[in-house]
Each structure stands twice: as structure tokens, then as C-alpha cells.
Image 1 (cartoon, rainbow, N blue to C red):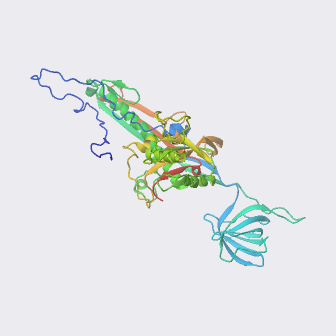
Image 2: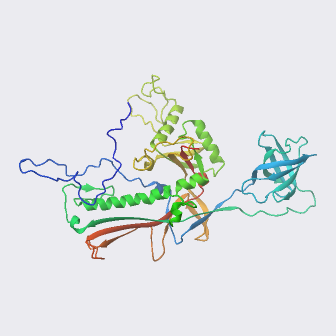
Image 3: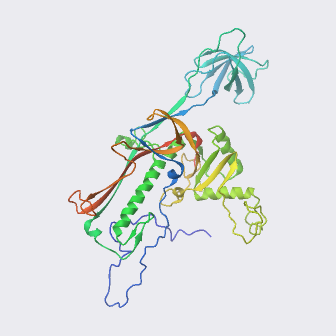
Length: 474
């Protein structure tokens, strides 16, 4: 039976500054001799409503004193070109023109030995470079049978070198290649205000919030919820932020945006665009891509509920449990889920915390992707769409070494970490202050208490090529 859409769940908060008519008595008749029987404490029907904690689990917060954060990431150690067009192939020699994106000069030098493979057929030869200029190299093939023909597009990589006796050394040298990335912090603000008269009103409902604040003063609940909401935005902004594109309305209005985690992984990381990987062959494809990247041994999967179920179902099928409808006896005929003496009366744990397939993958539910007021409940986009619903994020565990432009030296940093503006005179990690003339504040003649919240921060996604985003859309 499907879950009916009505009654559903509320999406709009009751973020009012005063007591609500739905929670307080608004009329009373003296003709009624009975007092209402009321529950004094507010019932927490949605449990813990906050969605933050992701960045606290996988990253760190570090100060910065600049409008821009820059860092350098290592390039590849070895060279490989995948778009090399063959020409003048005859008598055991050939010429290749490099047309790889971004290549301005060829880094293959005279005397180096190269492996050449035709992209369309897989046929290959080995050769030695006899001339190199600009984006063109000339080679002499070691093989008598040359499998490369004119106009063939080939892949070339260096595997060594060879020199004759009594000759000079290698001509030219190669400089280390770094990729420079940057991000800029954005300013986040929020505000809560309540007038002095409402602060003096006491209600009969005891209110509470996720951070443990309790009391009978309604404005305390609203102030605490504003604070919790702001703390959530400090994280979700780091996840969802995008830089303002050229000619965009935001840029024209003076807003520059920032690179959030999703944007960074979409731009220079790995993307699984087919929804959820549900078969072992899917994970083999994922592992093959990770092999071509940093090959980080341990990775954490932050997933929504459906992707978590799909991973569990895949592993359960590998474990030998009978499928639904096949007549199994409550799992007693299947293999054990890590427990011996499986029994039909035991409480079977149908979930998995992780698995190993080439690398270690640890699975964790991500509340942000499940919460219906955030990304939870968004419709999956058409698989042909450019960007669809996000189902999960693979985050490499541990830290990486990068050159920090501010510090001027190499430093160990978590793959994901937040940089906030700070100096000896000003710390903008998390600022809050009270203005007005109520609630202990004496800063103005305003008969109210205003609580201000501010932070200035950005997230640095180091080694985005080691991350993978799971979403719909190619």
C-alpha cells in the first residue's frame, strides 16, 4: 500500500515572535465550569530538526585574513596525450600532432621512448622520439610492422628513454605542474527581534529547542530557533553555493557567490549521473574511475535514504538472502550478516555500515538529503537532464598536503575544510550581538531586543578529483 499524500507533513515553520493562537488559549467562557486539560510541555513531533553536522564530521575550520583563498594541487607525475593525429607514416617513421585540450607545447623530448596506441582499434607500437618541436613530434618505430596509419588518432605516453654511446644528455627539462584553485568567502547574516512588551509575557506552554534551551517565554524559543537555523545555513551555504556567472543578474547586482561542495565536485570531480548504483558492476565502474584519480584507500558515502537502501539491498543479495516472494523463512535460509547461528527469531540487522570493493567504503545517512524542507523529497530529474536530484556524495577520508598561499608553505589539510575571516582585531567565524534597550541590551532607545548573527566563510574542496557526486542527469 502506498503512503497517502494526505495528511502530509508541514514544510513551513511557525517562526512567529509572539504566542500563536494555535498554542495559546484565545477565548474563555465563564459559562464553562471546567478548565481545559492541557499538556504543559511542547511536543517535539519532528525530533531533531537541524540538518548540519556534515562538515563538522569530515572537515575542519581554519582562519583566513584575505578576500580570496588560493591553494595549489599537484599535477600528474607522468605524461599522456590522448589526441595525437598521425601523419607521414612511412619507412618505420611517423609524425604526430598533439591536439589535447590545453596543450600549448609538447612535453615529449628527443630520446624518450613512447607507447603509441590507435584509439579506434587498440593496435599499438613502441617508438623513440627523434624530433620534437611545438606540438609536433617525429618518432622512429621499434617494430617492423607499424600498426599506425596516416590520420589515425592515437594515445601516446612516455615509458623511458634510450641514448647512443658517447652522446650528450637529455635536451630540455620539465617543470613541476601545479593546478591553482581559489575560492572567496561570503558573508552570511540573520536577525531576530522582539519588543520589550512581548518579552514580559509568560505563556503556559513549556517550550524547548534542539540545543536544550527550555522555558515558558516564547521569545526564547524563537531566538534559539533563529540561532539553530542560522547554524544550519552556515553549512548548507557551503554545500550549495555557486559563483556568480558572467553576465548573471547576481554579478550585476554586486554579488560574487562562492564555490560550494556540490559545485566543485560537479566542475572538477567525478559524477555518477544514473541515480543510484544498484549492482556490483556499477561499483566496479566507480572503482575504475577512482583508480584513475587519487586512489584514496578509505572513502565515506553520505547518502539519502533510498541510496542507502539500494546499497543495503545490493549487499544483501550478494550475501545469499532469498529475495522477497521466494519463500524464504525470515532470512533463516540466507547467509549470516556477520553473525553466526542465524535464527528466525532474532532481530536481523538488514543494513550495512560499509563494504570493501577495491577500496573501503563506509556508508552514512545524510540528513540534509532526507529532510523534506531541504533536499529531501525533491523529484528526480529526467536522466537526460544536465543536473538532477543529488542522492549522495563520496568523500575521501583523511587529509592532503597542499601549498597554502597565505601561510607560504605546505600544510596538511582535510579534503574538505572551511576558511573563515579572522585577524587579531576581528573574528568573523561566528559573531552574535544584542542591540536595543530590552533583554539586558542598552545600546539604543529602541524598545526591543535585536539579536544579530554574522559569519564570513567559504569551503575549500581540496582534490575534488577524489570526490564523486551521485545524482540524476548526465
